[in-house]
Length: 371
Ligand SMILES: Cc1cc2nc3c(=O)[nH]c(=O)nc-3n(C[C@H](O)[C@H](O)[C@H](O)COP(=O)(O)OP(=O)(O)OC[C@H]3O[C@@H](n4cnc5c(N)ncnc54)[C@H](O)[C@@H]3O)c2cc1C
Image 1 (cartoon, rainbow, N blue to C red):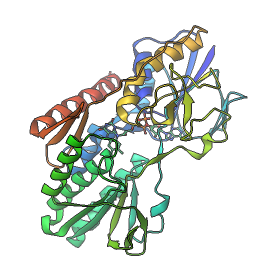
Image 2 (tube, helix red, strand yellow; image 1 turned 90 degrees about the vertical axis):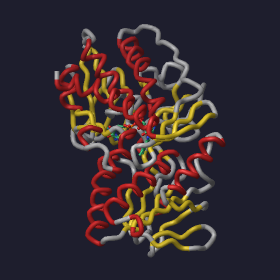
Image 3 (cartoon, rainbow, N blue to C red; image 1 turned 135 degrees about the vertical axis):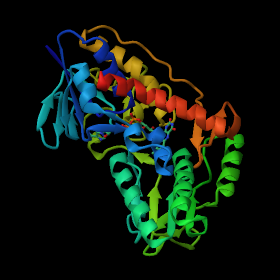
């Protein structure tokens, strides 16, 4: 019997569980290690913040999914890997030995520069903590009748979170009392084309989100910007860059320059053939790409095939990530901006499209878990 350990219940591992639920792999004992009993789908979080979804609509229950897949589910966190000894360390289940290990544990948010803020800090990772913090912030704003929120980070997540927050807070305390500021660092949507950047800028202005360029650090009143000015805030959402978990550094696995696991064209570690990684925790050294959910989802099928091949000592399959990806950014009300290949457009139709894609994605795991 060979031992496969799935660390993390991220997007690619949802696909592995679905594959196993369809057909078990003979002579393989599979264990899933996940700190939470559910996987919250980030793509629907702005819609949940805005009030368009209930949280249970945005989450896949990992226990029932693992049960359908014949996988042992441990509610625990990986705290270390010894790649030479082929063991994982966990917070409360000790060491776990593996023959093949697959990592889909995502990334952390680097919010260290905001740590000294007097305002309550809401980091978007882990999402389980973010959803609790956001609900608390909304409740406090409603009780006060006013909100001053700063969102730090001008990437796609920062834009969506600022727009969702403004829409929700305006509904709770009135538009005049709902102040939302987006602090963008080097600028809005870095790495994206001018069409979507322009449309996002106009949309933020139309919905009453103030945009400030500059780098922010935490201060007693809220934020201090690099031009010396201050921003008062009751709450700060940190949608700043991602960083790897600290324990990867001592794992013995080869890491890419960004500190994430260096993988090759089969999502296989370049240093340890028995280790695979997908999603934000992996960096493809042959074909670098952005860390986004689209790539994590697309890596699922090849990861699944290659785990099965590695367990059977068969050659692994190469996989070429897509060069361009479709972006659908929720903008607060039931509207969205779509961007593809340098073209951007937006409206209620784009929201309906996004909503259909997201619900379809979630449905496949909900149906399996309830079967
Ligand atoms: C608000 C928001 C909106 C976004 N919208 C989009 C979008 O529309 N489209 C898009 O492409 N991308 C989007 N992204 C980016 C996207 O969320 C990430 O790129 C994506 O989640 C990465 O998937 P993943 O499977 O690598 O990790 P995750 O989805 O983060 O999953 C990681 C899993 O590992 C678990 N885990 C973490 N640490 C450990 C540990 N130590 N041990 C065991 N398990 C662990 C976590 O609990 C989680 O279940 C958005 C991000 C945010 C924050």
